Amino acid sequence: MSDEAYYSDFLNQLSGLTSELSLFCGFTLTIITILVTRLPDPTIMIAQLSLLFLTIMLNILQFLLGWVIIMRTRYCRYLPLNDIKHSKIFNTLLFVALATWDLSVVLIYLLWNLTYLAITSAIIWLTIFIISYTFLWGQFREHDKKIRK
Image (cartoon, rainbow, N blue to C red; front, top):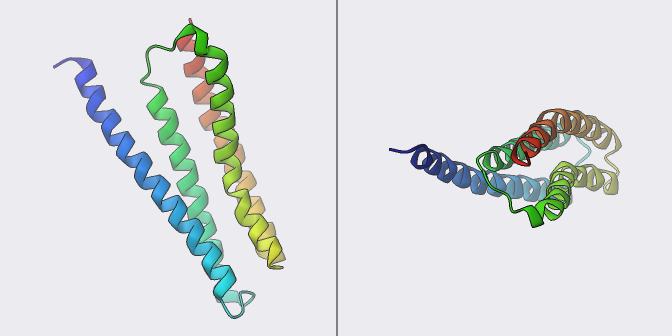
């Protein structure tokens, strides 16, 4: 069996994982939104702890989703030369979109005057953003340089 057959199975598995992580991210964000808007008093401690747990889970799921996307691109051997500029712009915007998606949760908390939860979530988001930038974006740029040689 050739290496491409092994990669094919692995890429199929990563494709399924991307779909599952995307579904879980959307589901978690929906739960957060519903809980904030429907709880009678979202300022009580147990409600805020539950929302904080869901926020941390969403941040981890987003990080894993970005990691899987980067892993999938590592198995691309060929990039057409005329698409180099467009792929750079696309990948930069993709990273920014994935990294700032979790910031919407902080804004939701601010809209509902959950200030301490918003501050805590912003700190968690900033930590995940820095980890994502150093870990994921670094991996992507390293692969990007290798593929363009």
